[in-house]
Structures are given as C-alpha cells and as structure tokens.
Length: 597
Image (cartoon, rainbow, N blue to C red):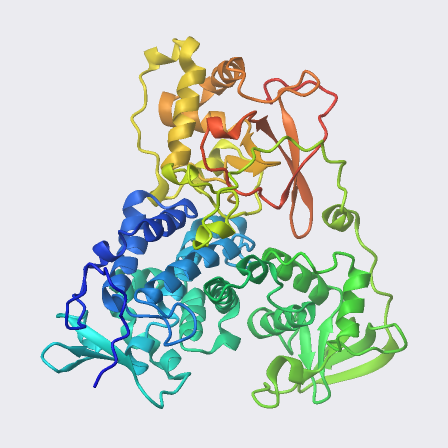
C-alpha cells in the first residue's frame, strides 16, 4: 500500500483517491511566490526578453513540468508538495545574489568578462535546477493510476500520479545520475551555449555530478545557495548562511596556487615560472605571488592582503611555502639546463599541495642549486599601494539612500533581499552583477553591447537634432527604457551606468555619446545632449559642480571615472541595484568640469 505524500486539502490538481493530476510547467510557475522568484532572476540578468525566455525561462518551465509537485525531501527541508520546485528557484535566486561578488570568468580580460559573464550567471541557475534533479529517479517512486511505475527518463509524468520514497536509498547516488536528465531540463541549445566556454562546462558538470572539489566557483556558489535555501526552509537564518565566508583564506590561497601551477604557469623550461624537483616545487618570486594576488582579486576575494610582505607571511603561516630562515621565505637558487644558466629568487612550495600524492609531473632534468637566502620580499610599488590602500581618497559624505520597504514576506525568499519591496516587484528594471568598470568612451561602449543587447531603436533624422529643447527629456526617457529592458547594462565592466552610494552614476561622456549615436545618429551632438540633461536638474551638484569622480579598484591599480550622480534613483527605476563594490565616490574636485571634454 502506497502512503500518499500529498495529504493537503484544497490542491487544485488533486484527485479524490490520492492521485495528483500533472500540470504544465507554465501552470506550476503561476503562483505569486514563484512568479516573484522568476522575476527576480530576470532582474538580476542583463539578457533581452527573448534570450531570457529561450535560455532561462524555458529550462525552468521544463524543470517544473518534470518535477511537478514532488517534495525536495521526505522529512527534512521543503518536504511538502512542490518543495523541489521551490527549492530550485530559491537556490537560483540565492546563487545569482552570491555571483554578484565575483568577476567571472576569473582571470579573464575585462572585455571577456563583459561578454561571457551572462553565461556564467546562467550556469548558476542551471546548477540550481540540476543539483538534485535525479532524486526523482533514485529516491522516489512515481506510480500512475494504471499501476505502472513511471521513470522520468521517459519524459514528464503523463497521467495522474502518486509517489512514495524508496526504502534503503543511497544518499549520494542522485549526484552521479543527475546528467541523465540534463538534456530534458536544459535542452540542446543551452548545452551548446555552455560548450562555447569549455572551462565553464567542465566546472558545471563536475558540480552536478558531485565532484565539488573540481567544480570551482560554480560548485561553491551552488553549495552556498543550497545552504541558504535549506536554512530558510528549516527556520534558520539564510542571511547568515549567505554572508558566511565560503572558505578560509588558507584554502583560497592553496586553490589559487593549485590552479595557476596546473593551468597557467610554464614549468621546467626557459622563461618558465616554476621548476619541479624531487624535493619541492620552486616558483619565481615575486612573479608567482603577484599573479596569485591578481588571480584571487579577479574572483572578488578581498580578504587577500594587498601588501606583498603580508601575503608572503600568510603563505608561510599556513604552511603553503617553506621558510629559508626565521621569518624569511625567499630562496636564492641557480638553475642550469644544458648551456642555459640563470639565478632566481624563488619560493618553495610542497609538491603535494599542488598534485597530492600521485599525479605529479616529471621532475626537472637539469640542476637546481640552493644558494641560501634570497633577496628580501619586495616592497609594494606605488601602483600597488594605490590598489590596496583603504583610503585612496577621502570618500565624500554618503548620500542619503532611499530607504527600502521594511515589509518583508516571512515565508518568502524575498525577505533576504532588503532592497526589494513588494511595490518594487511591479517594476521590470534590472540588477546587474558588479564588475570592474573601465573609463568609458564611445568605442568601448559600443563593444560592450553584444548582439543580444543590441539597441535597435530607430534613429531620429538630422532635423530632429536642431530641436535641442527636448533633448534632455528624450535622453532621460531613453535611459529609463534602456534600464527597464536591459539594453543598457549596469555595473558591468564597460557599463555606462553604475550604482554608488545608493544612487545611479552616469559615466560621462560615454552615456551621452551612446545616446547621440543610437538615437540621433551623430556622435558630435553629445555635448548638446549633456547640457540639456543638466537643465533638467535631476543630478546632484556639489560646490557648484555637476561632475563627480569615483575611484575604481582593480587587482593591480586604481583609476577614476567621471560622471553624474542622480538625486533620486527612483526617478530612473523603482528597483535600485546594490552598489558596485569596486567603486568609491571621491570628494569633489576643485576645478569646474561642466562638460567633461
């Protein structure tokens, strides 16, 4: 006798004898809470509506139709009809929220992060859908009205059904089986898209098959999102789960070294970065340490010391490099390979840290001779000082931020996102991941708009340019529309708009040049557009100046952007993205810079 899991009354899809009528994916997503979570995913991406529907919403609907009203667990978290679908949607929202802390793909050029970043965001959503999906195959029995058992590799449930949990099930088996449902949930087009980034595809597959130690940042994000969703379901504090450090600094340093040595550094050759002997791995200093710092910075890991002396100390304190004498970790070594000879300052890394007990590559066939203590750990260079200083310039007095609504939904994942109120959810503005912006000129801005975000609105005729009186209003309406429909990217590497101190920062002259090109058809009209925008009085003036400066913190240096701060960000959109963490508002400059030529 089967014990029905779904005993709640009032279910629209229920039959009197304990069977449940299967619903379409669209119908299953029609509950207000699920609609809000889907909309949150839209808000946190920069995809056009067509691409979002085709590559994100369609897999979510397919997933919903596959898992129907199955629970996520028998008696633990989300153990109610529809719990599996709710758990996956919550994880997707949490995962994208966490993804905002990272510049992905890590170590890539800014332009590559801008173009490929949305695919990495999508992979987080796909991971949320796929991480437990095979529980429907190995943990649960699905029985149809005719008495036959249905297995989801045949497709969606075709007739009224009821379910029970298998006895003696293996807890970890589902992770090995997850890929069996990959094509049904994701579809060939999504898999093709992910394959355009082979590294991402491998991280994704390792993650959903349970090889989390090889799943990298994708595995970390999915694990953290899972933990937050479970905490919420069990009455815990998901905010704490989200804010908890994912891993110790020791593990971050170790994994960074492991990645660089295995994937980036040339070994045992002239011009290389490291030499492997039977005793240890020797890496050129400070080159290897600088590259480790840059790699971790690119992942948004800000707990890594910027001061190289402190970074050497951390590596030594955690046993990741060996000291040559008390407090000293740089060795002097001579390397001879045939007729080639060179002396280096080097750090000594245990080879087991990189390769474990087995799998170590062939040792260097030449000769490495230790000469004793090397040069002192290098002091910071001026540009490194500017990068890591906590006070590059005294920040301006914080702007008064728009207070978010305090009306949170106790039983809803939305409670974790305090900048989103119930009223905000009626709007269709976007939230984009934080990135390291670069000074925006017209060519950079054009390059930042990919085919999927192409602004194809018709351009005005030349005669319209002469009507300068409404250029400011036209620019503002264009800006509002672009933010709402995602054709204007926010907080990305080459974005023309960022959020600073709780409001919008419009990069000048880039945003005005883009409007002039896209709408007016003439770039040289940007000054007229800028002046008419200033006449609207929507921006903040400080000490008689219109232009504000922000510093941009990168892994190796800082730079500045100029632009306008909006008085009331809700004049542009009801939903305000989180501040871009790499930007800091600086004190107003003494010189007057009205047109930012």
